[in-house]
Amino acid sequence: MLRKVTKTPLDFEIKSDKITFKGYLEYHSGKLILLQAKLSGTLEKPCDFCAQDFELSLNEDIELFICDGLYEDNESIELDVIESFDGFADIDELLHSEIELIRSDYHRCDSCKDKDEFEF
Image: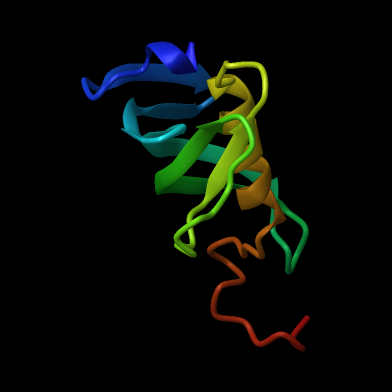
């Protein structure tokens, strides 16, 4: 699939529960494919302060590169690159990876946002 991506953007949209991952893939240079997308919706997760479940609103811009094979940085440019060794980009896997990154961040529910860390 990656070898078929050209300078003409290839649109995609997938959904998982209450989350939409929508964007495009576009040939950038060499073996690099640009992925630009928006992650939107809501994610249920426990508050990291009170442990009560709450819905976290998502509105994230995602920009990364997918390399068809091993990425070799010849220009010392810092890029967010995912290597693909089978010629395919698993957009569903990328969505779930981004969700897990968000889950691993520290988030407080609305009730706890203004509380001091040592209040109970």
